[in-house]
Structure formats: C-alpha cells, structure tokens
Length: 266
Image (cartoon, rainbow, N blue to C red; front, side, top):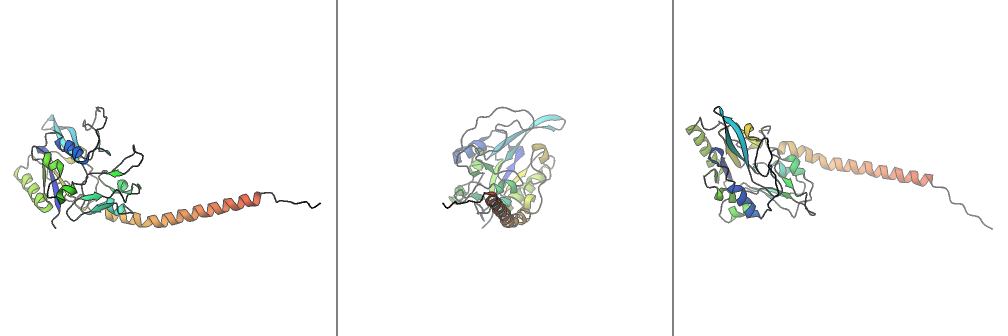
C-alpha cells in the first residue's frame, strides 16, 4: 500500500480558514471563545487546542523590504515513525500503513506521554471536561477508507492543500520549487524532519519566520522515546519498592510507640 500524504503549498494559501472550518464540521468540534492577541501569529484561536485540530496561522513577515502576510498551517504531521505511538504504553495511538496516525480513545488512560513525545507539540488534552481524552488530527482516515480525501484538502479553494501518494507529492514539491526558485525556499518541511512525515510544507519564506518547530531531529523520534519508555517499568517498580518500604517502616514505628496494654486481676 502506498503511503498517502498532504502537501501544503503556503504561497497558495489566502488565509480563508476554510480548512479550519471544514475540520471542525467533520469532527463536530465546538467553537471556542477567543480574544484577539498581538505579537507573533494574530490568528484566532491563538494555538491548537482540544477543539481546534487544524489551524491557519497569520504571520506578518518582511518580504522584499515590505511587510506582508504569510500564512502557515498547524496540524498533526503524521510522522512516518511516530514518537507519540511509541511512547503510548497502551497503544492508543496507531500508525496506519496508509499514512495517518489514528487515536483509539477507548484504550487511552490519560497518561499524556504522547504530548511529551511529539516533537511538533501537537496532541492536546481535554482539560475542561470531566472525562478527558487526547485529541488531534487523524488525516481523516475514515474518509480515506471510504475512498474520499481529508476534509481540509476538499475544502481548500486555491489548491493550497493537495492529497496524494507521499512520493508523488515530494516530486511535485521539488518541481514547484525548481520551477520558481525565487518564490520558494529550498526546503520541504516534513520530508526529513523526525524521520519524515506525511504532511509536507513548502513556503516562500523560511519556516522559522512562520513559527514552525525547527529543532526537530532528522532521525525518527522512536529512537528517543523507546529508551525512556523501557525505563518506565523499572522506575515504577523502584517507586513501588520505596513507597512500600516507607509504609512498612512508618507502620512499625507507630506500633513500637504504642503503650503496652496492661491487665489487672482482682
């Protein structure tokens, strides 16, 4: 099976947020009460959240001597070898051969290790609910199974989001960059980051100017998460031993400090 992916062509994005609305409608996520904020971004809401899995970012960037709007897009990157899935102790996150990283909420225990393991800071936790779960983009895996395409790609009116085979999209991205070297930076974000992802971005300005996470290793995150996860059972065993010994010691001290019972026979 060929791995599917998304190609995000940022110079084609007009900031309409059609993809953002389509995502909310597809997954029936609630609207959020937000306020305008200054500084890097200007988008509304300010960041990904438990209700917002796809976010168009607004960035005022100096281009050819004048300030201009350049839009970015934040969502799960669907790593080829996802650190979130390797960090999850109950396999609540699963990488499909077709590309998406999906979430099995019925397995989730709320440990939030996936949030720590994600180099792109994507998974969010439903802190405001009484029965919270992790939330994130699933690349509309259910739509793909039915022969469709992700809701964001279907909704985009300018062709800024293209869905297809990952290798084909990489060649297409390289073709666009080569055909307009002055209009694109020579970097396909996601092609190598974290060992490669299934969401690829091309841009007219350096990605760091759009707030993209740049300190991402080129090797898969599993190389960093697996050693930590293997240590968890030993840490928990050690903690249980220490707590057990502490409890036994405290109980013994309390017993030793109790006055001896005395009886009188008349």
